[in-house]
Length: 129
Image (cartoon, rainbow, N blue to C red; front, side):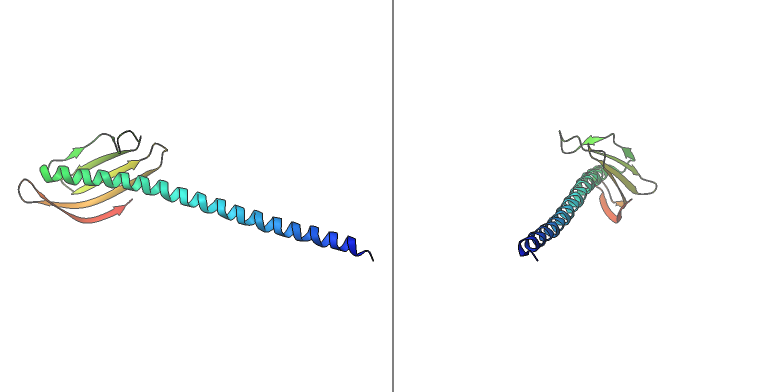
């Protein structure tokens, strides 16, 4: 039996196994990077929606009136926007944070507004829709 031929086959078989393992690890790394990218995008939309909630709370501190804002760019020049509505009858703030990429997150915040101007705004609950 030719030992050189067996060594060549063994080397090729080992090379194929190592190549398959390397491709599997590369696919896993690529998938993980996509997952991280999705989380970062979602978090950016969430933080934009939270900026809308904070803006609404500041407005409510000054006035109890219902309001609705058109899309407000945040941060300026980013293309990301939030749109906030508040209903005094239900005490709910709804804020939609939208990214220029199309990703959006909606937050609903139930608040209690009491006292005299400047009013006290207390958050009762805060949830993502």
